[in-house]
Image 1: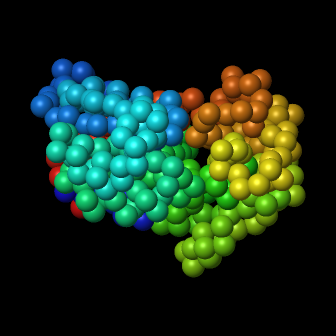
Image 2 (image 1 turned 120 degrees about the vertical axis):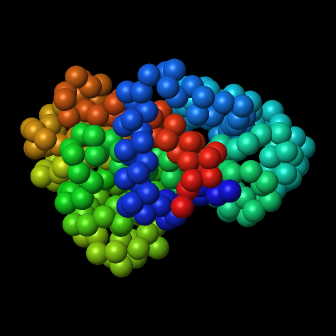
Length: 306
């Protein structure tokens, strides 16, 4: 039994294996895979709002022949509102199911509670900490779009301080070779110091751009994110999305082979006029999450994670 809590537990070999399995599941006939999780029950506990992550996990379970019980808005609609600890939630829910997929508002509380779960727990986003399955599907998307996951120039824009998807993805990049980052973010929302140190120790080159145009120029991958308004510690941290948004006019500096990713939802950071452009990969990225999470659920529930 193995929890999925951080991208640090995945190496390149395992990531590659998940990508290959996701590719198989993408084209496999439904009848061939419907028994893969037959008889298994997964609980999805979401203490924060979610569309793509929750629905793709639940769809993944059903496509593999399993069943789902779900608690949406669990912060308000479960005994957590009465003060029940997450450790006790895991003890109880873990007695009913074969695995738990959870999104929680506190990365610390989630990490401390995981040892009390009698079944595997998958982190589906924890506060401003990590979102490991998003990073895995992001890497899968880069591989599908560009045919490689190394030797990349990556522009990362938006809220880098609270953006858990950024934190996980950059830790994945730290495992790869010849990665360079160009960061552009609103004042006060840059990468946490410990993550910058991790990048330096891993040999990832980091530059800071002064504009959207400078960030996009020469990039292989653009990773845009929204302001995490729900996590801002002070009102003065709020800034206009237009300050770092990608507009159609910016595409002139973006190489033809480049791809634009976004974990979604977007709230003004990417002009919808860009959507038809072949470089806009964010909706394909969201679809990829289904197949990557199918592959991960198979491994978790079959006990095959190394």
